[in-house]
Amino acid sequence: MPKPLMPKISIVTPSFNQAEFLEDAITSILSQNYPNLEYIIIDGGSTDGSIDIIKKYAHRIAYWVSEPDKGHGDALNKGFKHATGEIMAWLNSDDLYFPWTLNAIADIFNDLPRLEWLTSNIKIMLTRKGLPYKSGLFYSFGRKAFFEGLYLLDRGAIPQESTFWRRTLWEHSGGRVSEGLTIVPDFELWAKFWQYSNLYTVPVPLGAIRAYKQQTTSANFNTCCREAVHIWHKYKGKEPPLFYRYIRDFLMRFLLVKSICGKNYTLFFDLKNNRWYFFPLLERCKRKFFRKSA
Amino acid sequence: MQTKIFPKISIVTPSFNQAEFLEDTILSILSQDYPNLEYIIIDGGSRDDSVDIIKKYARKLAYWVSEPDKGRGDAINKGFARSSGEIMSWLGCGDMYFPWTFDLMREIFVTFPEIEWLASHAICIWATKYLPHIYGDVRGYAKSGFFDGRNLSGRTSIQQESVFWRCSLWQRAGGYVDENLAGMPDFELWLRFWQQGQLYTLSAPLGGIRAHDSQQKFFKEHSRATRNMLNNFYKNNYWKKCLHEFRYSISKIKVLKRIVASYAFQVSYDLDTEKWFVEKILI
Image (cartoon, rainbow over all chains, first blue to last red; front, top):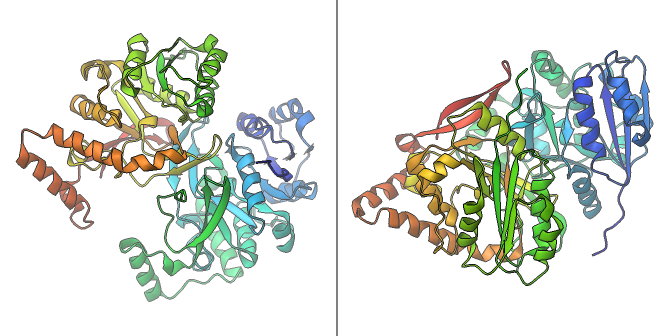
């Protein structure tokens, strides 16, 4: 079967004084040798060895700059202004992609033209040295559940490191991330995306985060949670009444009824036809990942 | 400064007429560049181009041979007879490790000298050579749970591709794989290992099986085979067998599960001190 064209993928890496991890992030993307990649690094004027590392790979990076900026959100906006790819994502300088990520993304977006954004329901955490020490499985993500507040930061957030989206969706929802928030620019972006499109989930690990004490999110976790709740209210998220919440939690925990949270879309790989397909699930994704061959 | 210790890892791959997938397996092992690796391929006299593929990588193999044998179990035994590593495992043809597997193995086996047998409870299926599907609803494997039949094939089975063990445990358990079993020789090996040692699990994925169409029809057979092995284990004592089956049925009832729960050992990582530690959890 001839492979269809590879869509252009744009990845932005905002970095600031993380020379220890930056090289791992860069090589995890460039070593995949994806032919149609546009990789952009926006450095916030680092004073450690970051710039030397970037210069080492400069011939394979589409655009890079090192100058003081106003924070995480500002760097991302600067980066995405230079991005021209059809599929977009950002990778923080301490996170990693896997060797199969970009190829898998290209295949999925090719096979399902109506899919707008995509995430993985597997979260893999890395030690400081970059070895995975923990993997966790989520349920897939549904629209109703988001507006009921099930994906707030402390209740199982949508993993940023494994989320990819199409340019159309990005432009629909304003084409920029919020700069005022120093800490969780991703949560607000998801809130915007949910207004337009459903999130599809794939049972393949796409990105891994490095967990350590000084990590931005874990160091200011309470502030992050408060910010997230604030944004969520702004985008019409509403805590349902208390008795409803009790019934919902009871049904979800003891009877494993996920349908109360609405439809979730999970992707599956069809081995026989060698392509991806999806169907709406009302429960958590089942253990059977492959369509039975006839 | 402390020098890094690299214990010798021995991997055996039994192969027979699966040239399509053999190269992926070989590359998933050799591309990790583990400095103290002993990789052995035992081919059962394949008639397709398996041998050509093996010859391509022969420079990096510790030993390889291609001659008719009595089956998968025989090939594995022949391979381990040639091996001298401290940490052992076999990887079937087509199955693959993750890029970090040996580094993670080294780290854990060096940190904990008492761990003799390590597995991962994240189950993985490779759809193609770059698509791992991961699922895992188990939190660990307990000894009593195993003998109750919780880990039979088709239930929450222990995935052989992500299991590693030390040579000492292998020697104590007899140092062989049963050659007469057509399918699931690993379950019989686990049965002997559980009598000699304790299984520790990791939650990070280590290896996975390769999905192909022909596999699906064996699921029922494997399930029956493992059940027979467990029944053979209890064959002198009918009441004991009944008791264990009863305990299994209790473990399926959510409210009563606590009665038959027992401890599983899990290797976790502490973020504050950045050290690995062993955790006992009730399952």
